[in-house]
Length: 214
Image (tube, rainbow, N blue to C red; front, side):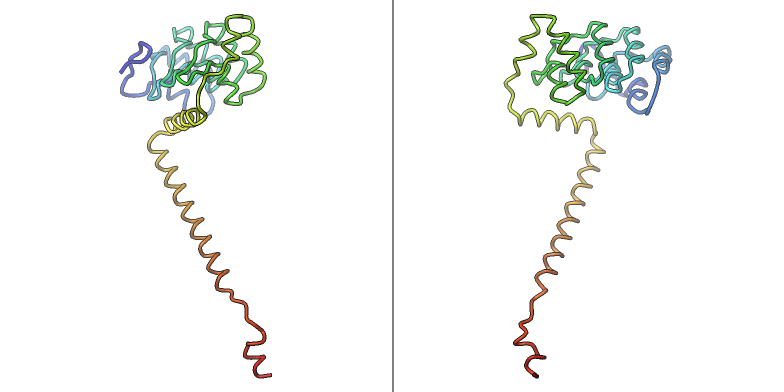
């Protein structure tokens, strides 16, 4: 399988494992993996490169190390998102743009990085930073103001698709089982509560045994 001119191997490379699993890391750890022969452009099951994950994690040293190793800052994943589409910090956006990241490229849903930042609700300073850079190019002003004609349901389906892909089949199955069990528990509790309310029949004091004896 090929994407963006890069062949995908059967297993995810150690760079992806490093960037996706560790709670914290430094750029030199990425550099060491690269020196050991890791492919800086290898893609994972979602078509994302190590550059995508370095940006998602917000690690500028890792981004710089990948750039020095020849990684493509404009590589697209299965949804057409470049690393810049995932930016959530000014420093990562500035690093990518200084390395030649394209701010006008649109993903499969018609959104460029600035539009995606607004839809994802990232920090205001990131949006202002991208907006200021795009306004310097008169050809980009129209591109930022004209929104693609996409139905809301299509956007929701795209977000759900990305969510399921990131979870993976095993985690998604566990999540669905937990949701089903929780729903059944709530339904059982609600049913028992209704039964208890229905069995509490009020007694008419004028027909009670105590009143008849009097």
